[in-house]
Image (cartoon, rainbow, N blue to C red; front, top):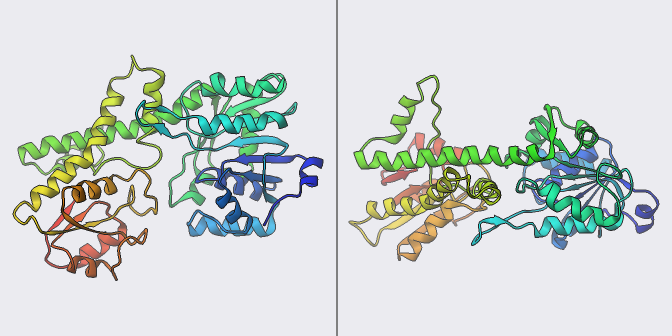
Length: 402
């Protein structure tokens, strides 16, 4: 296991310690180590820590795996059994949504902050990456960190630096994307920017912590609202018998129109969650955002209804659902609307077969084999390999593409 001996961590603080080694935290830790810093990582998930300690990575992307292997073999990267002293602490833990309340669950974030308190020293920098409601740095993080007896700005510095990572392309995006650097004061912004400059080629956009928190939520909310518009227009188009894709293509020829394409719903760990963080902080001012969320949440039910209508004449039809990830060409099934559609159809008693070669779901040799064993093909997630195969011809079974 690649772990730092207790004596070593006590004698010399790390340059940076990353708490939370998931899809965001691990890439940051690896890139910080690759930039020449003496980096360490910690996660409460013991299975994950055992994997990492044995040189195995849970992020299955070839480009990132190459960087990971190089860092583990040649750089100063350690995976720890507990939080230890460090010059900088970077927090990238999950902040899921409490479904019933539609509010942020900051349990992991507060626990990470609490774990830093015994190790916080004068001159330390704390950077929060986790997506969270606006004012979390000031109303949650600072009171916890100041339990150390130290004062923010005077004794330690705090910054908020959200990530914009696309699953499937992490190695490129973490280096080349712009990064928002939001400090509680100017010196915190400068310190955090210096941390990122070691590996980031994209622009570092400097601002304050509150603006940085808000910008992260705005980005995902913008996309969610525009997807909701496209999905609603699709429903209207069905009423009038109009091809929505063709209509959007024509409308987008206007120089100031850029409608997105409708889909089966919204998935992943960001878009279904982050807009609610804005609503949580400003419930009286937000009417469009929660309505957009409801439109997108209801989309799987609409798609399932379309499938039911397509097989109404043959109740015992074998329905073949292709694609279960939350978007094309990624091996991530978090919050997948495709799975919701599958489960809705199964709950109605339909014989539903599922195939997704990207995540190895379904015992089929290939797409041709899958199509041969179903009566209707329902394309829920159009991976690139499907598009190519479809262009070459996949048989004469009826196909629904969403």
